[in-house]
Image (cartoon, rainbow, N blue to C red):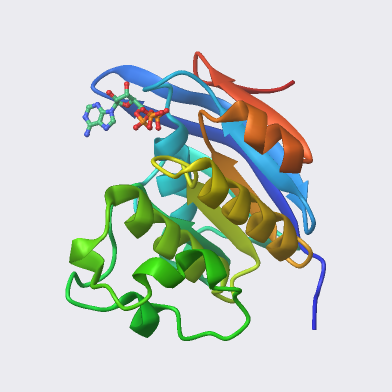
Length: 199
Ligand SMILES: Nc1ncnc2c1ncn2[C@@H]1O[C@H](COP(=O)(O)OP(=O)(O)OP(=O)(O)O)[C@@H](O)[C@H]1O
């Protein structure tokens, strides 16, 4: 059963080594949104996702899901799932053991369905992670560079999957592949000089 959620992020501030990376981040999203966050390398896109998932502590932040203001960052993962840019799976697991769910069309990954995670390319590992994270039950899904290192066919596959999953989730994507993302996004945000602007 699907349920509509709203996300409200405001006044999010993060400084490291006297450098203000995020300076009053504000945005909102609702179920059905695919939110794209673009911006040059090192502008703080990954940092923002880590804060929303609770593995980094902001200097200040206001994060509200529906009517709940989440004040303890260790509770954020009840609402957010997160695909980082690094591998999260034990390396000896096989792809078919990771993707047990039968609601995923696995045709494009048949060639490596029996492979171990450690034998996959970085792009293939990331693809498996993205599919796995998209299937988790949290209402908001953070995908840090889900298209990186993938062939055009696999990029199309994952874009289609994101669009499909956004029917009952808020999906937030960082990426440099703006052309592909522009086909699926509903909200286009750019992070520049610590500020998130809507394009
Ligand atoms: N532990 C750290 N110590 C010092 N500076 C850091 C640390 N972690 C991140 N930074 C700085 O914070 C900034 C934001 O990094 P972040 O990885 O969030 O950028 P990004 O926009 O995700 O980049 P990319 O597109 O390359 O993934 C960078 O300038 C980086 O150098």
